[in-house]
Amino acid sequence: MNDTIPTCTVARYLALRLAELGITHLFGVPGNHLGPFLTTLRAEGAVEWVGTPTEGGAGQAADAYARIHGVGAAAVTYSVGAFNLLNSCGGAYVEQVPLIAVNACPPYEQWQNFRAVGLLTSHMSPRAESNLDVYRQVTVDAQVISHPGLAPAQIDTALTACLSERRPVYLEVMEDLWDEPCPEPAQPIVRRERPLGARGRDMLEDAVQAILTLIQEHPGPDGRPRPIVWAGEETDRYRLGGELVDLVEATGVPFCTTVGAKAVVDGELPQFHGVYNGHASHPDVRAVFKDWATCRIGLGAWSTSKNLGGEQCVGTDWVMAAHGGVSVGTSYFPDVQLVHLLPALQDALVKAYGTGGLYADYYAESYSYQGAREDRPAGLAQHRASLSVSAPRSPRAERLTYDGLFDRINHFLGQETPENWTVVSDAAFSLIGSMNLSLPAGGFLSQISWLSIGWSVGAATGAALAPEREGARPMVFVGDGSFQETCQEISTHTRLGLRSVVFVLDNGHFYGIEQMLVHPEYYSGQDRAEPDFYNVLHPWHYDRLAAVFAGEDTPASGLTIARPAELDELLARLADPHDPVNAGPLLVRVRLDRHDYPRAMAYKVPRPS
Image 1 (tube, rainbow, N blue to C red):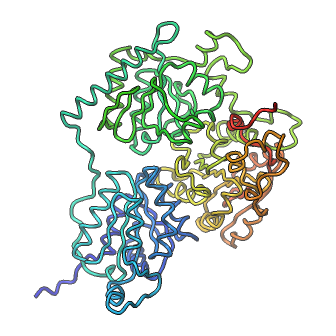
Image 2: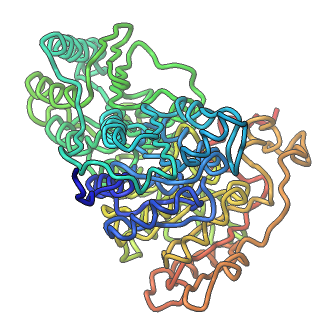
Image 3: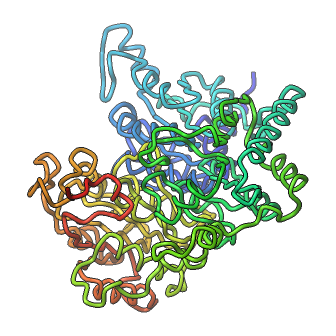
């Protein structure tokens, strides 16, 4: 008989694995089923528990943390907590974010009682697999752990799938298993990449050759090739920013990004021509991307409605390399991984055109070829300068506008602040307005496809705590309707002493983007004096919430701005490290006119007849 006391338990096993993945913070809302695990987690000391007011906020924080760090985790309790976390997990699944969802469920004994006599206790459902079933829809692996001897294999399988597929996984652990003995972790968790076999190499060569042929078949008016790269979200998810930089620097090819990939690489790279977002693009960017470039090479870009901004499809002069395959015009090459395509395409382009042979300033070229025009920048430098102003465009401007706010913020971030910032943008007008900010690599986060309103407030917590962005202050842009969904997550900012700046864009307390999508004629000033009733919000004094969340040792500040001069004064205070508004989170209520909207949305507004 062996009386040796085991050195590992299921709780300790999971804690050790999370620490092995470099996870420094676990986000969540506790419950009695989760308590034993959190006690063990604290005893181990490598992973810090961050309690959030809501499970949704925990998921948002874990999502943003994972986007920066490569993997994140949230822990909740059964049913009432897990179903609240589901939205965040769904977003992570759609946007390819590796998130570990831990759900502590009632003990094995209670499930046996239910099976025998129908006894239900707190949070249980008569459908024993109810939590598991819904999470199977939004994860690449879902495990129910009910046997301590099987726990290590189940945990390792899920974590390996999370890293390999770069999508969420689900671990449902029965409460009475946490303290049960199990073997120590053995082999490390490693990502399993899809191998490049002989057939894969042939497919890769065919795809690269097809891209070269597409470029050759679409020359500019001078006979020279004129491609443009459209770098997208998968360059971020697959950590291919370095390979992207290598490609554009070796070839000189101009490139744009999607909104979600705008800070995968530094926005000051000479070849960077801006953010392309379909009809919602800046007019200068759209002109060079669609009208001047003769073919478009999407690398890791997703053809979502947000990325295409009102366009319904891509054309036969496009390349779209994403989701494990490459389409070139009307041809498709399956099982071509982006990680292999980028260096292979770089080598082929250098061989065909020489080092730097595709270098061009498409703004200057189009200006020279098509002739001077007042609304066309003379070069890339002029375009970038137009996005950043140090003062209001009109010195007599009485009210802030979306465009005035973001133009001024762009100048502040680039010229006036000594600090490092991470911009976290919410959905709707906030995202449209912020997409042209010029930021360094890693300086921008957004949820570009799932678009769960309010995501940014909780996400800022994870962004601030990710080791790779340590010391960077979160700057959040969120609409008033979105903020009402998740405002309580400011409590976490305050509790942790995050020096976040949260701009709540209050456009007269209504859902501006929904009005734009359903009845855009409201913004033309012709037919509708009032917005649709269902878009109207109850008005809040958003800045006053800072006093609610502040404590004696946890300061928080709030203020309201409505005029350009007030924005200038605020930005001067943010640049002063001794100003008390920089001691903790700052809530800024930005008063905007109901009929205002970002210029990028003008394509949707009917013109006066």
